[in-house]
Length: 557
Image (tube, rainbow, N blue to C red):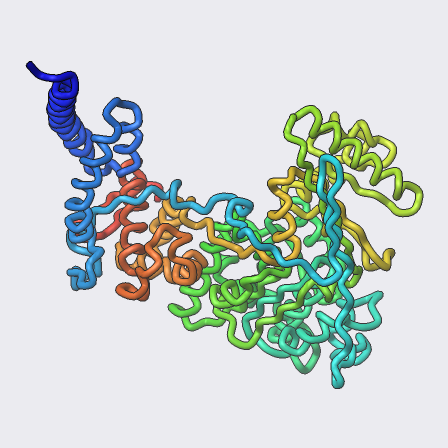
């Protein structure tokens, strides 16, 4: 007669066999489901399959099957998409034969900069950290201006060429930033990238480059200027700054007979452009950045094609990867970088990170701290407060700026400054103040982001992928790109290409991809193929996939 132990062992064996049977049954079931899901669309990504898996039972079995099939699919996929070391290319148009990999531009687009911050953030010497109930506060002291070099001497306006002095009425001398850029800007035609703090006088450097172009078209005998042979484009991404720049340059250049207007779409004017000045070029990371990339890429290609020189001048805030932006602009000798210590009005920074989690308590604490900071400074200095809503501004109506009593232009300026992150840039005016102070109150989880941003530790990334289809469509319509080979080559002129080679993993590539594809030709081909497919699907172009040629649709194009 079997013992109790024998019965338990027998029962365990039956259960194990039944479990094995169930596993086999689930394996067959989910394998068939997996194959069905995968075969429904050749463009279905592993992420889609993963989403399907978590919505069903038998997840562990599905995972096992997925891993097994993925191991078989990956080599085949690489062979089909041209990811191997040797790629067969069409000799005429340069397109990858068998290229079929579609990329999701939305998923490849760079996330907001705050999500790319590293865990470490170095602060200047003398910075202090205070832990208080409900919040953490960090003080960053004013930076001391570096001492003058032995041979450094500020240029007097009176020592400038006589023909250039009218543009600097009211000024007696250039500042230290302008002093170092002066000769390159006024007397040479080199492409320039100037990275300097807010208030460092970058606009005056732009004026120097404008004067250089005017001089090239000035009659040496009588001093007359032939304005019909050149045009200058000044690009400002903020609407309010466009009007400000037009007014500023109109006044300063009126003695030269220069007319300053907002640029129209007239092609005849664009063909005469000899100088392009890009203000706030660090906004490459913004959603408007792709437009800047497209303008620069098109200009550089035009220079190479026509052999006619167009001078590019980039004006930027201080940023850590200025060498990448310099490479994008094709700068050779005209790179000038100044850190925050060159700010004409030194700025002390205060960062307050709220640690309270409950929303109402967090909001109340933020308001209390903000009120304390305002009261402590009221009557001593002018205070500019940025808040998120008109209702909040009413709490500070005696000191706040953004309310209904403002004129339309002032209110629009405040809104634009807030949207573009220029709040601290307004602290301390060179004409009136000897120092400035900026205070940021935010959630503790975003404290490191603002510390990195304001202390030049956050690199500028490209947003070009998010608008690649739009920009490619523009190039096709203009006739500057006619096939996939030309489009792939066009990408090499973008800031995306510069950063993709520098940080491949950040742009969806394997870290070691450059060892087998040093110029990222395969990824460029995939990006163009995907963008062209989108345009073709929406009827904007006709895309011949085998040859890689594009054809504009519509009789009006």
